Image (cartoon, rainbow over all chains, first blue to last red; front, side):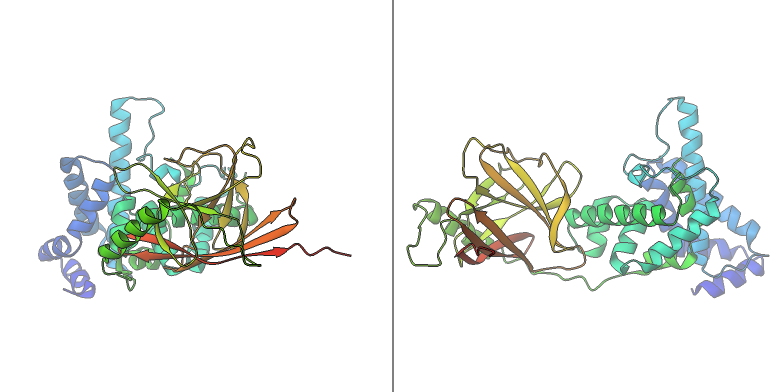
Length: 184
Length: 201
């Protein structure tokens, strides 16, 4: 079913909208949650919470990209669940994200006064200017949290090439943000 | 959480949708495992010979060693001979970079080893250096070259090398060609010549 048709089902308050979104994007949302090392149970809960959020937001929101809208909700839901799970474990110093995801240039300290929106806009400009493969490898790793092996298989390249690409993209991002004045 | 990770939550829809939809034309090199096996056999034969040093003018005594590693096996080192393809592998440096490793003998076997990074994307030696390469025991008296292939190209990669011999006042110039063969890579010493070093007057 086309995204536009699914959105219309939401607007019509038809419960088949949930069935349609589950068929089209359920696996993607589940995989995204599992990439954050959530249990199957927690990952499924994230997916269910995502559907509920979609039901509550559409309408009035009419997403430009249903895929992006759905994945964004799923990602944020999964990250919150991970945060809650870590807080329960009460392990001080434990990273929120899997160690690999934290390899995103934490060596850049963002100036405190810089707004998240400004930073996101800068990242947008940087990513749109990147080569298509490098951009998508970066996003699969740091937005979708795909493991390196999965990314390599997806694009038919070696694990080594994925790691080299990520290394170079991270460094270019660091230099870009430095030039844009984001370093604090 | 890292502020960059937070900011990623706000990036354009088009970037997210693009990352899900993107499917490059994957270059699939059909496995020619027998080629790799034949190359390995050639290496075994060559290693049984003494290194052949040509005496014709322009030939170079400069010898380049290439490194390969198959899963579960120790690292193998083989000297490159002009016109002969041998298997090579990518190795990981301490910084997380991946690249091909080559080496040549220093003038003095007691010299500490060095590792220089050649960045294929820039076409130059990189400013940074590494101190260790995973799985490879560095030997004193050798200069190592860590070649990072350009990320946007599937290959083949050409690596030009230029080494000065100050005592002999010569410059050795070599070109290596690295190709993907099936699931692995091979390196070929395309050219290797020696020239007297030009004196600037």
